[in-house]
Length: 426
Image (cartoon, rainbow, N blue to C red; front, side, top):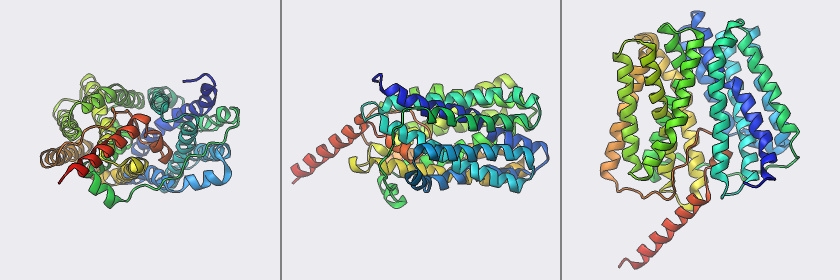
């Protein structure tokens, strides 16, 4: 990466890191506060789901706003809305109001992601996108882990202190991005592929991304509820959530490299079966914290790896000209799964108790494993067109960042080989 490129990247990456420090623990904190106040699990699910609905709405609307007012002004507006949504939690304690706050937070957060990712997209090219994506993930996941790990200490200062700190961090995140050299990012607008076309192209990719959205949203919003109800204090909940994210960071790359050497559908089936088995262990084993730490670390690695492997599988079959639209469409499907997740699983926790979360994980992952195995048996194996690239849920601009030079060249080479085979056929 060239020396002149780093100063252009430092501002947006630092801004992302600062705002994600606070945003990373707000989902856990909101769930814990509502549960401690005796709010029913199904209402906690509604509040939690609002954030992911905001993300989904932002994915289809924020780019137009950014195009009208520019990236730096847009980031400032999104960060201000994020800060306000955090600070309002200190002033009003009402599930309905918090639903609105989380909806606004989700919409503004997607706008922040879109600004940062389109900035990175313009700053680099297809040769450097893999490294840019790695830097993005370090900033995003690193901030998430640090924020969760610090939750206990922040909460010790008072119920409103974590929300105030998150609000200050969101406000301060504006500073790095407004003092960098003034460039004007402008990512190309591409429409996501429609659901029916995605299903025809890669039903495994569609189901994998949808199921992954359900699982990841449940981890962020309902796992803290489970941990608090089995006797963990706020500090322990934050530490265990950081452990889950660490598992996602550590295990995603080796799992992805394994998928480069196997049919990715078989890998997805193994991952889903592995997550179902871990869920069964959590249900069956005593609530011992050391055991739970290991199980949640492993579960984080499995749950968070399903999405990038499913995206890689779909990309192995997509035409070169449809790669961006394919990945953006899968991102939208993942977001819809995330929005549905707390609404669907929290009533089960209300009926079956805190263990309802892991019963839901067990049923979901067992169903996914069965479907992936069936697809593995009835369809020919698509050859990987490019090595696996670790990734996380991003904005539409992030989907473009996922299309590296290797992926594009691999898709073109596959199309040329297919054309030659068709021409040689009698």
